[in-house]
Length: 124
Image (cartoon, rainbow, N blue to C red; front, side):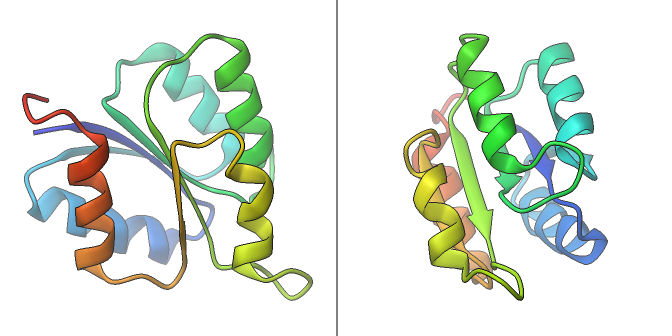
């Protein structure tokens, strides 16, 4: 199956989404913030990058722009549940210009697996 880089600053989200993806047969590499995610993205080959938008140490938007400027062609799924100051849909409005697809948290396991299946080539 696919090799997926999962970036989210919330440990519970990383663990839950990682478990859903792993149970579907995907290999998941996790990062706790945008800075670590950028480092891992530059070191490895991934079939898909899933990133939160609102994070410390290089948020998802910074990460999306950096990946794009480095010519990374890997599909990217941006996700957000928002914060106390901004709703998830609003946080994703900027990400839509740089990500392949977006999803608002919370989402079901079926929703994320459907998007992963759509974004990752069948032979990955």
